[in-house]
Image (cartoon, rainbow, N blue to C red; front, side, top):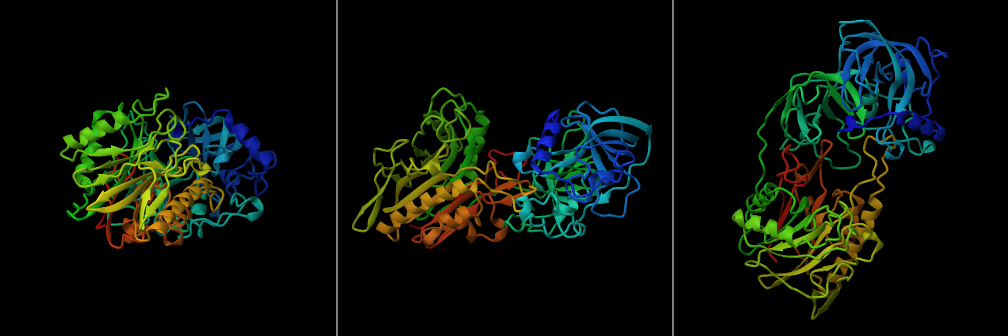
Length: 611
């Protein structure tokens, strides 16, 4: 949970560095030069950064609206007599570092230093939280009414997400005057630290292990039939999403478990915070009640005898040290929810001792434990192929050596073994009489290419189904780690990780074009955790020249997702088809991403076609 990250003395250092870099320059002068008699809205100002940042202020008064006794300890205060400017917040966080001694309803006077805390540090690109640090607090009275909450609703949140960043400030919106009636991010910023309320709202991000969930206050905004909010473009960020946490420690009151589509019913009320993992967050003093709407896990159709079913599934760092229950649950999903596909490309299979960093690279025990569990669940006796990576050269958890693995049902499909493949030997394309073939099967595509440095190399395999050759390329592209969030102070945010995935996509696209150059109507499937959206530059590069088609686009827009992140249902896992695959059925099988209880954080994908 973001609020569990201590701020400590690093706050002062971050502010000093930011001021030196000119990243947190204020936009207005203080109403009182000596720092006395300053009110909360003077501190908050009309931009994202306080005009008083770095200054000592005294006698800042307000009513305590929320107290956080864990994680980032402190409390919120609010001025009960607001000014007339909608851009200036009347709430403020007071960072105490130790457990606060005030209570909700206390009227207090605070002396302290105005700071701008950047959750995740300056390099994260996150917006900052205006706060008072090193406070001296005087309780003036107790038992006062809490200022009435501002209701955040479908009509109060603007439809436009954020202003364009100032080119003169490197694309930052920090120095821009807030326009809370025009932009959603400005609206939320104008309420930073303020006591807010939401009414009954649909859950669009399931309860996570950090005791938080996501709701939307805009029921119609890119809604799908299962209750989520679909993320369909960089220009449509789903403005109604809001993270919800509880100010009550979970030891006193367990956080409710909710799935996507459930409803957080009744009033949820508390201060609006900003944190590293989600941005604007309602820290609930009063939490609504979760109403279960009965979301069920999906089951795909069984393939006909003359249809080939190919699936991809990220099994999230599976290794033999995982409990048998995880293997059994994943196996049951393969058999029951995925209807035992003929070929399953797995991502994130770890080596035989998981994250133990001792040079082990074989995953034979991991795969055997999984395939045995599939048989025990009533599924086929899958055979498998893979290529062991070099130790610690493919990214992921150190010592885990994640890789892609092909499972295939030998009663339905055969694998064409062409020896010679290893971690550093590239497979190539050969052919005769217009029929393409791999030089090495299974084999890795261009493993020496810098695009795959510290990343998983694509695994290519040659299969035969009912006399027809099918090429499958299993992928796990580079993660989005290092990208700025959609609540970054840069608008649009910097998505630095795309550069690597673009190179990876170009490499795979080039290999597919080699196959098609030999056999124009070759059946080629590019599958896996692409770690990028169907509308991304990565996907465009994969499909360059018409070599591939993203099959997820065959689904209605509301069905296009395999992952839920910060309340956005989005595509990360894909299956792409070559032009020779004319007719197919595609299914994103929703069994994980929308649920509080998950076997993996990804939903598997299945494609059925007749070669």
